[in-house]
Image 1 (cartoon, rainbow, N blue to C red):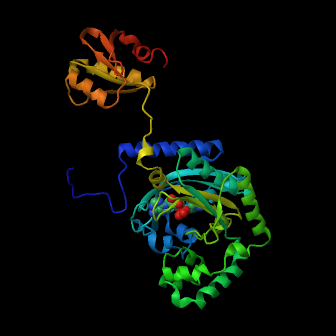
Image 2: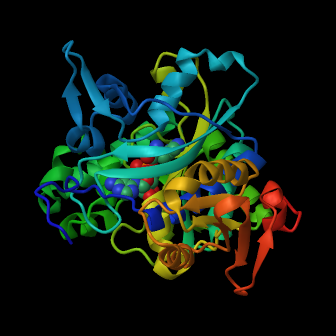
Image 3: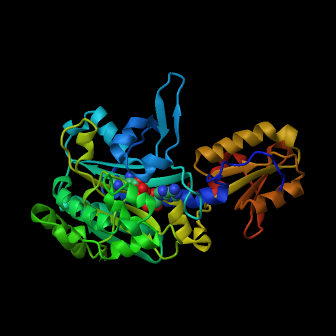
Length: 420
Ligand code: HAM
């Protein structure tokens, strides 16, 4: 391999053609799952005002405290490469007055996201998410439907070893009494907590459940659990999400320690994990965020959604399942023994084949006819059209090796046997 002093930045990667094909397959499957459920694709900018994430994701989260790629533009504005997609989509929902549309507004997205994390398998600084947001519905049916979409997608792709963990954080108001109880537990055991957790007892005590510090984990083993404290409508909502998942035949485990790294969640939260992944075992997750739209200046609007990491889906699928089997039915190579003279005819026939929807290529490297046939074989051509002087041509079927004269005027029909 030639060595250049330039390399992709730490935590980022190049997507080469083979990997791009595997990604495209995942994205196509997701697009089909989303479309069947009426989730329409949207796209928001790759960077946003920094404040959107500070407010939306939360000041006390790891994302905002440590992981954002933030920079100043030439006008002195603070901008941030988006670390996640929910706050931007809610920003767009408010900005475009989507609360005036029929509710809920069901949106889907795919694209790059950026977090300055310590790179490791399944964790990158530029990664790709696909996801859905269902904005304007508080029904447990919306949660169950959203969860079902990710379950369907992973099943359709054949991702092995997937488990769904489910929890509930209750509404913001109802959660406050529990948080006080949790803070008291943390303070009573302060000496055993990691510095990071100790510093966030006031701002974000729930994060202690996510700590990989041994002392903290010991303290959390005996901590009170929010799921046990749910009451009234919060408890009913959670109960109904569970019974709807049962009715849909979607298996889950209640995880009383489940918390998520973003502050906007209320009520339902969930996480799809895969035993094929290492430390970064979550393929995708999300939950309900009933306060976010209002926090960003819109009307009170309940919402739910999730995002999954495309790289993690691919890792979980493993190399062997990445074969896409997408080879074109008709892949035509247009060859000739005198390239310069036959070029005008070559380009005209390439156009004709491609306009008819076939894959068509030609030699761009000055090979002789023999070399062209070899090359056609290497790139997987199913047919070779060999142009000859004087307007005649041969068609070679690469699988059978049969070759016959054809009329160039009907090259598409000759290749497809009249199917195209
Ligand atoms: P999140 O859990 O932060 O949620 O990210 C969702 C998914 O993105 C993760 O499950 C993981 O697969 C992938 N992911 C996150 N960080 C990285 C990374 N550094 N490298 C590779 N993959 C990564 C959200 O972002 C929420 N916006 C999800 C949501 C949508 N909640 C409601 N609606």
